[in-house]
Image (cartoon, rainbow, N blue to C red):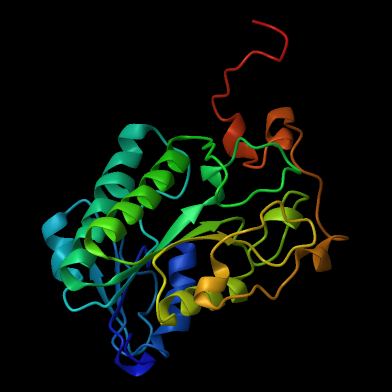
Length: 270
């Protein structure tokens, strides 16, 4: 991989909450950073970066925006649970367009996957990235689709990708669940930089979580990219509020996503 000053980095989803954070932090490190989103960039574009408005579902436009990129940080798409029809263009079609652009440019993809790929595991269950996925909605299914697309593009074309199963990427934990799922902004940035600069990644799956004492997530491919989390949600344990009074959300790791449209009968009943 080239050195930082000569890397050509593209960030999708740049107008979102995490995208804006990464745009500011990465612009000074990677000159010529290209930002894209279906929505206009809010505020001023960071110095040293440029913004191109584009729809992920538009293959021709994404191919043009990605020209010359050696790294694509893919944080674009629908970021909450929605109908399949809403999820489809950005998260399914758009992901294929991004990986196809990566194939053409021989670029590495760093993908914002999600803990909602495993949301229906019960809280307290310690997981490896090798455990069977249990998505909690169409959003989680779309993230699993992208992980599989990454596997396919690596096996067939040699395109490397790092898939970050993001937990709760917020400034500070606000509820009990976050003491297990919190992913601090500094740890997020460190992980993305490590994924960009690793010599080789293959097809890697990482838990996007800080070094939380109460974490439910363990074995992953973080060592492959030379990354180690530094922050711990336990520092906020005496400040967080109780989780919402929702028995389904309180039962499962995916929290409120699991209770949206939940239709299973209670155990022991048909």
